[in-house]
Length: 264
Image (cartoon, rainbow, N blue to C red; front, side, top):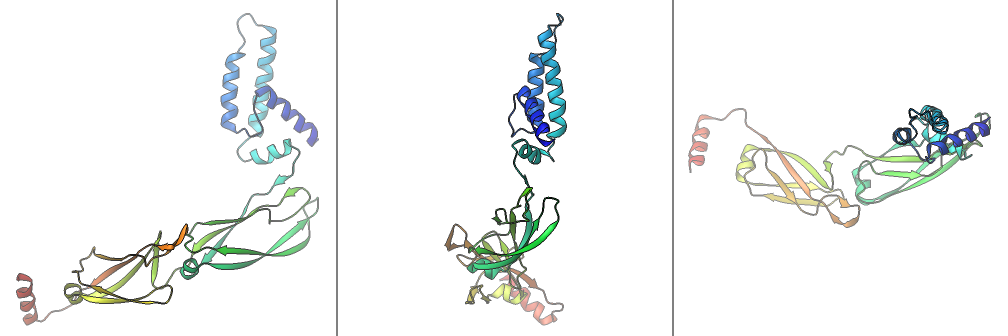
């Protein structure tokens, strides 16, 4: 029955002058073009009528079966190939340190082996090795082709891992930059201070801040961000942002000194 159906489908594809990689929108465009060519005229030409009838039949069948949801399955059936299972997608959570240095992850998977009726006969365990490169960003996809369940009637699905970043206690990543937030009191913000920051590679930076820190101020330290995935020797920036802590109460004599200092 599958062979008969595939042959019938192929005949209608020939009538419609379309290929196996067609989609619904293309079927509609081809149908409208051919319908205008073979539209029955007043003289009721028998050949034109027969061609138009075949065209309508082909369109109805192909439009019903080549839907977006069934497109992949039916094109493979027409070719006499096995059905390909959809990809299996999993999240792979990594720390900023792992994305900074790069690392190797070994992931154990268990593949089902199915018989012709789709019943699991056994399991086969495998170790997939993921080589994380320095600078990879969240959303990076790692694909292992055809590592899914195995059976006589299917092409095993691809297994796809998508990189996700774990929250970090000190930094937030912004593309290739690292953002560091710290609190300072108003006095330091007006008079200057220094910030000590431990980097992802365990160095201690001592960064002087000589500018007046206003609410939108940010200190940019070049070359202290994440490695660039295309060139890990190059790095983004470290962006330091400040939250200013204002005093709850100021003594009267200190207020006067502040006024005199600011008027100067």
